[in-house]
Length: 339
Image (cartoon, rainbow, N blue to C red; front, side):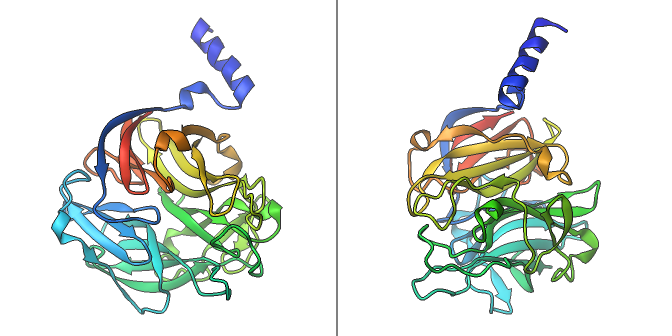
C-alpha cells in the first residue's frame, strides 16, 4: 500500500467516508433558468431537444439546445388532466424508449386553518414531450395525522420535496423524499420504490423502506428515514436534511445525492448544501454520511434551497451527469461541481 492509499484509509477511519468522495465546487459565470422555481427542476431530452420543467405551484416547460440555450420566449404552462391535484410541483421525470415522459409531482392539499399543508406525491404521464400530462394519482401519502400546531412555518406533516431515479439493473424507480410528520424517529429523508412494470397504474404499487424491508405501503405506511431529523419538523428549531436531489454519476460510477439542511429556526433557514454517495439504492444504509459542500454564506442569497446538478454533455440531465456538472440552487447556477 502506497503513502496516498494509507492517507485515504486513515481519512476513511476518521470521517466514515473517503476524502476522494468530496467534489470540488468552484465559482463560474452565473446562469439562471428562465423562471422562478420553488422545487427541484427535472430535465430530459425529447426529440433531440433539452427540456426542463420549473414549478412554483404552476409548472412551466422550457426547451432549447441545452441548459445554456433555452428559448426564453417560449416557456409554456404544462397542462394536466384531471385538474384536482392542484397546486402541483413537478419534481422528477423519466423518458422511456418510446418517448413517453413519466413524471412525479409534489402536491399540497389544504388541511389546516392556519395554512399549513400535508404534502403528498403523485404520478403523471405524457405522450407529447411534457406539454400535457395525464394525472395517474397520488402514490405516496403519510399515515401520520396532521399536526396543525407545527412551528416550522409550512407543513403539518406529509411526504414531499423529493426526486426519483431509475435503477436499470433492478428495474425499480427509487424515490428519495422528505417525511415531515410522525414521531421524530421517522422524520427526515426517506426512500420508496416502484417496479417499472407498474408505472401505468402506480397507485398502491409504491412501497416505502421501513425497518430493513421494502414492504411498507406507499399509501399510509410508516418509514424508516435514511437521514433522520435531529430536531422535529414540528419544532421552531427544526434541524433536518430535506429536499433530496439524486443523480447517477457515470464518471464516479455511483449515485450522488444533494440535500439542503434546515437549521435551527422557523421557516427553514438554509444552513448549507450537503452531499452523499451510494452504489446500491436497494440498501439505504449504504449512503455515505452527508458532508457539507456549501454554507449559507457561500450561497449568498436566500432562500438557498433546492440544490441540484445539470449534467453538461448531450443526454445529461438532473439525474445523469459526468465528471463536471453545473450546480444549481433555486434555479441559479454560480458554480461548477467537479467529481
